[in-house]
Length: 369
Image: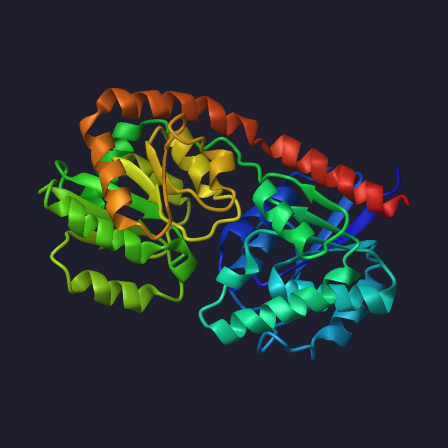
């Protein structure tokens, strides 16, 4: 079979869920059929990580969301590398990739990882991004949604040729969870007898971390040895640090940690209090690690964590319910064990093999028309 060259366009300014997805996908594509190249549209750690994995990568920084100055260089790369298909991720990638596809006459596929309106810090930025996306969406040959929730949203916007392909996750390896628990808590000066509520998330408004802090305040009155653990980095880092330091909640804010899943055994409950979530890939890590989950009932989360079967789900922006569900798990050990047992089987349905196979099939359905 012919080998096709696939060009992925992504922001790459930080290593979030979309970047992790791309890295996983490109590391597992059939190399005899597909040869990937990546262009990062912001300076950041992702380009170097790709190069370390042996994946060809360029950086064409966009200075602002509507910056189309890199477009001629992008078209030149597409033509000189004889690219067969452009695969875009995120609003910047979608803008440049779809325009480049129009100028070069090659097909363009977009993966939608989240609800775009929640991805921005200002309403103006969100409005601009939504407008651009709506204007350029007809230039996309096909669209991948990482959850059925997002697929319905896209179809409502008029998207055609939409397929739901869940993100896949490799098995994580934590050979000695108890040692990880002790080592992590010792390293970060978290008392070994603390009850730890934790999360791993990009520090962004869409993750609802303000509601986690509010829930921790409520929990602290019922759980005196409570400790809040937040792992991640992002635009709200300073603001979150200021909010936490003004409370009397014992907390640890680690910043970005590579292979953050290794810290999961240090938590007694894992939370994902998002107000919007395309799928919630980190949930699969918590489910593998055997940590009971409390998450918001939004977006694609209920497609991953079945309510009262694999974890407990709460309405978004509701710290009272979030605190109540965490407290329930602290007290009801049999419930926590039942949820963990179910989750340990559930996560296996979201395999990398299935994600890659379905993506390759979508590539071929477009390329062999």
